[in-house]
Image 1 (cartoon, rainbow, N blue to C red):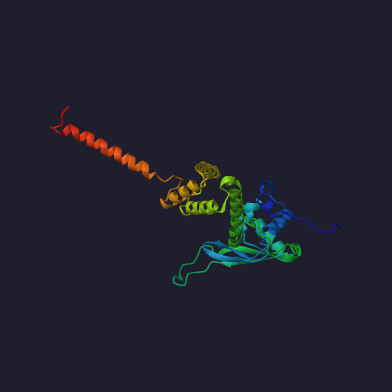
Image 2: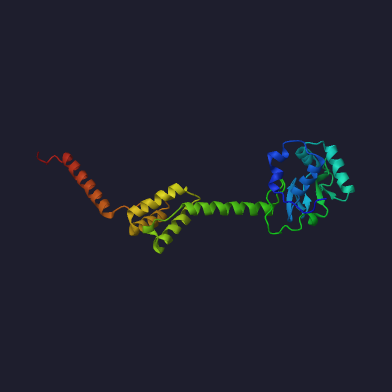
Length: 262
């Protein structure tokens, strides 16, 4: 008889290759091992929080029947057989009746079935506890695992996002970096996350403006709560524009003066 172990990736349990056909009995046993939680967590069924310990599976008979392409009766008989062979223990989570309404009796008194794989440590003894569990149960991933997986994906996206944005060499100095970080923080507070292409265009605009003007442009745009970079209007230009408008008004008033000689 062959000795030793092989490793199976848990994502196999969610692949079309694994789920496409009716399960055999040995395949159903391997599937239980793949679905078992490697770390403590919990799920919610009908609003009830259910603790799932290491080596346990929070699947009901109905869910396993759908997954394995079996009847519920066959699933029940199979689990009873595993229980009699001391491979699993089965417990049901009852539906609690509200104390303020004792006459309310649920039609289905059991919320779900929790299957505990006996000797789970024997099967997974060498697995580190700190390794994040990837998709243990479709639709029933425990909350701590969801948060850990989402954080991991978010960190990967942030690394890719930052890697794609490179500050030009002419602006790669501490003063501009501080101003640029303030600009990114400003966009984040406005719940606006521009694409790397848009930020690259903004950096190109800063490079063309020059270091001093670029920093002024960033500070001005932050002060005005702009979502894009805009230069501060030139005061001389505004004064010239106001003078031009005043002259135009004066010239127009000449038409209304009867004493004006033409």
